[in-house]
Length: 437
Image 1 (cartoon, rainbow, N blue to C red):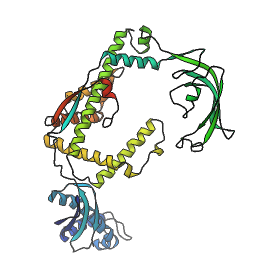
Image 2 (image 1 turned 90 degrees about the horizontal axis):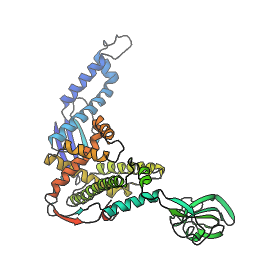
Image 3 (image 1 turned 135 degrees about the vertical axis):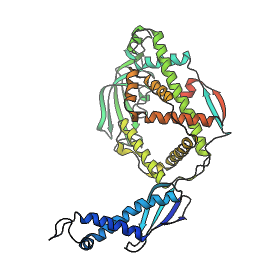
Image 4 (image 1 turned 180 degrees about the vertical axis):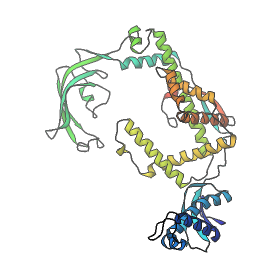
C-alpha cells in the first residue's frame, strides 16, 4: 500500500492511498464466494450456481462493497503509518474501481493541533482568601426571614416596599386589551414586576383611592401586539400593607427544618451551607483564572469539526437551560456565529487538558472523589442516601471524576504560577463580576 500526504492548510491534510490490485482481487473473490453459497438462481440449488453467473449478477455491487471496506480499513492503517491523528471524519473521494488495477482514493481531513505549552509558569494568579463571618450568617438569616414575610394592613399612604392590593384595567385608545386587567392583585412596590411607571405611579396612594396611569409598553415587550404602544391603566387601591418579618426564634428555626428549634443550630447549618458555597466558588474562581491563562498561552488553531461539535453542544445546553426555566427551547437562537468564540475556547481547553492529563499521567484519586460526593451530599436531607445513589452506578461518577482531574491539573499548574493571596469578604467573593461566573 502506497500512502502520500499533502499539507493543504494549517491543519488540513489530503492523503492519497493506493491499494494493490492483488489485495482488491483477494477481497473481491472471497466475498463473491461467500455470496455464491446463498445466492438463488432459477434451475440451480442454493450454492450450486456457477461463480461466473454470480459475478455477472452481483459483481458490480460486490466490488463497491469491497472498496468501501478497504477504505475503512486502509484509512486507519495509513494514518497510523504516517503518525497522524484525524480530528473528525474524512472526506473520501474514490477513483476508478476495476479488477486488475490498483484501487486509489483520496481522503481530506483535519488533524489535531500540537499543544505547545502545558504550564503557566510565571503567570499571575490572584487566589481569594475568604472566611465566613457572623455578619454573613446574620445576613443570610435576614434573607430567610424576608422569604417568610407576612403583610399587615396600615392606614397611611403607600411607600416603596409596601404591598398594595389593587384592581386594575388597562386600555389602548379606550379599548381594554386581553390580559390587561386583574382583581385583588397583590403588588409590592419597588419589585418592578409590572411595566415601567406602574409601581412608581402608586407611591403615595391610600386605600380607597383611584388613579389613572398613562404609560407605554417597552419596544421589546414579550407580547408583540402591545410592544411600544401607549396605554392607560385605571387602578383602584383597596389596601396598603406593610411587611412584617418573623422573629428569629424557636418557631422560625423549626420552620427552617431545625428539629431542636435552637437558633444556634440554625446558625451552624447556615454556616455549613455558606462554607460549601464558598468552597465551590473558590474552586471555580481558581479554575477560571488558571484555564483562561492556559488557553491564552497556547495559540494553535482549532479543527473545524471540533468547533462545529462544540457549537452544537452549546446550543443543546442553552436549550436545556431555557426549558429548565420554563421557557420554550424553540426560542434559543441557533446561529452558529453566536457561539463560535465560546466554542473555540471550550474545544481548545479540552485539547490542552487531555494532553496535560496524558503527559503528566494524572489520575482521579478515589479518596478525593469520595470527598467531593460527600460535600455535595451535605446539602441534602439524607446525605448517605445521596452518596449511595452516586456509587450505585459507576457512570454517575464520571462528572465527579472529571472535576477531580481538573483539580489535579489546577494544583499541578499552580506550582509554576505566580500565586498571590487576595483577602476578600464572602460578599465580594459571591458577587458576580467581570471574569467571574
